[in-house]
Length: 115
Image 1: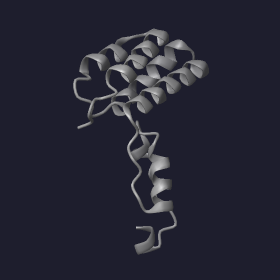
Image 2 (image 1 turned 30 degrees about the horizontal axis):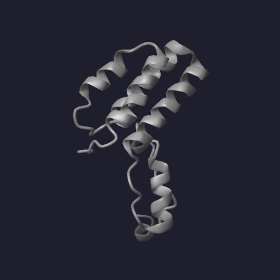
Image 3 (image 1 turned 120 degrees about the horizontal axis):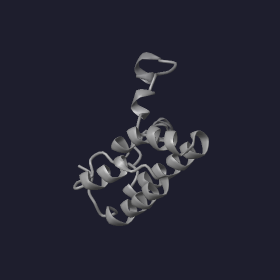
Image 4 (image 1 turned 120 degrees about the vertical axis):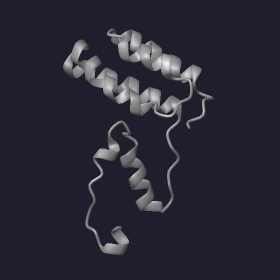
């Protein structure tokens, strides 16, 4: 669109909801013309852990946990057999327990295929 119509910019905010990698992917594409590989499940889990820790530090345990819940569905979208783990993460109130569950995601789903 930029090259064809001379756009100065485009709004991409909604595409980044639950996909914080999107901005890096866009920059990579504009620079190289190639699509960047999607993040691994381990990278997604690490991002979720970092996000939760930052939210808890900023807003406290209760709000930090509650506000990060809505992002997990998008972070882990398309992972086969993830329903039980997702349910555990979404229903847990203790951030340390959520972090342990997310660490388990890195181990237990590292070979999983995204559909």
